[in-house]
Length: 471
Image (cartoon, rainbow, N blue to C red; front, side):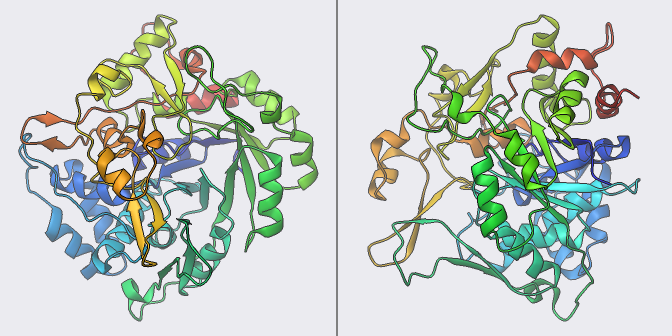
């Protein structure tokens, strides 16, 4: 049975295992964010594994020696000193390293495995197509944990269904890395063979459903016609949704406040989706009971919701950020801006203007430009035919030395470090400089008030599901 409510996969670790478990137990499709789970796992271990959940999940990994190596390398009993930096991982590349690939498999297993405990309902995982380096190992880790659905947006995932098919059969898989300036004959494939992790063990794996997150019927039709495997459904995300948004079609125009202008060309042709005969869900501006009913009247199976779940007590959002946003909700003040420059991806990114976060330019401009996580780096062809990596949020001189354009660096922010901080894992630099977070929210932030009981300080994921389903 397909879900009516899909809990949005918000990263980094906002849609963590705890939120996904709570949402699934309540009757929605709980979805964990698959973004940077290798970093999330090792930082939880360096914080001492509060609650012992990581140890519990690691004990369930089907190759104990692989999980034990992760534990021995990163676990700090009692947690690191609050002024101590988190250990740095190597940044992902096309080839990767055996250790990093194994860590990604384990980290994705851990998150999905924990989300699936204490209930028998489906669980999904959400990936960004733009973050291509860890696709194959991340998907395989989720498959090992029995994930029911894989969701992917922020790109055109034509080759993901075929990769899922191969990995579900424990076969080697490839994925084409987007390389700027690549030429015919260049090897740009990312490769992964499950035998590298599993040895001779070949556990029976199910093929999960694949939902593509799209912004137009044109993209959906392209996927249906050209994807190398089955697309089981579409999540249609409009420009009012939180996080990364699809850019407006045509020439970019801005409001006086500097936000992208979406027009008639960006309106989704729902009639086309009805004709496709594939289930679809609507996202962005449908987070009320009436919104759900309106979506279903348009032929949608249901809706995807993000902001309401991000602000609930079960999410991985830092409590101080959650409290500040709920105060805005109670005071009927909305402070969400679509920033066309913040993300190094070039996609517009919705930012809530909270004190102490990178939304406030005076906070962020004092931060040295550092790129040491690298999930949003782009790949480009070096003169000798090898692949190089650059990020528009790294030091400008480095970006230019790698062939980048000066204009692409203007206004860019280190979303990777900021989102880690938002989930409660801020990097500490030189024992005193603490990375600031960045908070994203959908435009309909004020609608979250419907889930707050009078005088209540918060609400649960179950409250959201009950309200939306009218139960």
